[in-house]
Image (cartoon, rainbow, N blue to C red; front, side, top):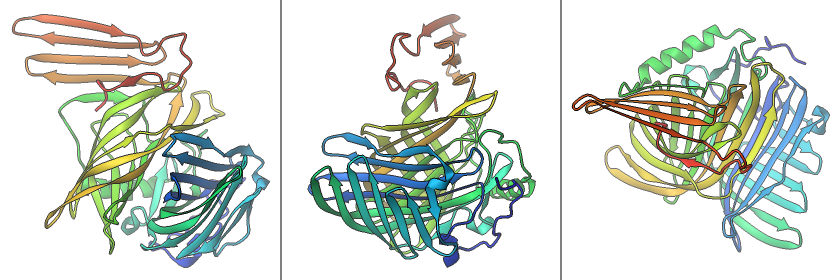
Length: 421
């Protein structure tokens, strides 16, 4: 296993050699695409290795939009030798019968498992970019760190074969490459103070803190909310947000590609309009996003297909598991700079949560016009407790609900839209 002090390339800008293998604790190459043939599909896939366990994973999910079918085609927790990384200067990866090759601006990916084959050519229309590139492009994770490069828009063409059915497809795609040194089992191992100082300096300039309520929750910075969107007008979007225990402190970023350049919007506010309980935590399935910077972006993104769930149990006394809940859907809203531009299209949403042995907890103080609302939620105790105090006239209202039927095994059985903001 590589040591956690392994040094990441500190160059700010992206360069051609970044496509290749970096031989660090964790690394993945990811593609997403919305394509159309005889039917409408979306694909999300990642080639990944991690040296902490160690293990290799092939994430490969195909969503059939027309029939609302989800094909889980991944291969997980394989021996780390299953993935072959053959070049430090370009993408050249193999994983059993799947592979990916190429170098900016063109990549070819072949995904094959369980009788399904997808082969796509991605040709970049936008330039690659690091997240927070102007601040050095090195992001902390716990006490570890990583670099996150992405191409928000690619033109895609290829074919899909499901059992004996073959069809050509074309559409829009996304490519990302992430590498670094961090731990999910021991997230507080490492040395990253300087990276946090750079990140804090950026956040101070873009901070957006709400004081309308006080919400303490178990959502933590080891998880994330992520979305890639392709709009009908040719624009595309990258969105990432990191949850914090105090939910009124928002941290996230948007990169909006307008067909010419990638615009950064760093002042973020988001609300969870709806969601489900899953594997002991809360998953937002409808999110309102407001992002400001060089313009103002207002969007509502929602999952509306059959989701895919990945979970990984962790080797830790306190941290129980990590889950990744992914689902495509629709996105709509507008962008205002010199003029208002309406936006609508498709999006791929991924919600990752690192869950402790106490599962989901939330305590919220919400001022009312003539009183105070207190909400307490515990998935472990299967309880949602709501107390409302009113002063004139004095009145107390108490409501207790169960989160789930104790005989219910369906992990997305209870939608909820009344407590998380």
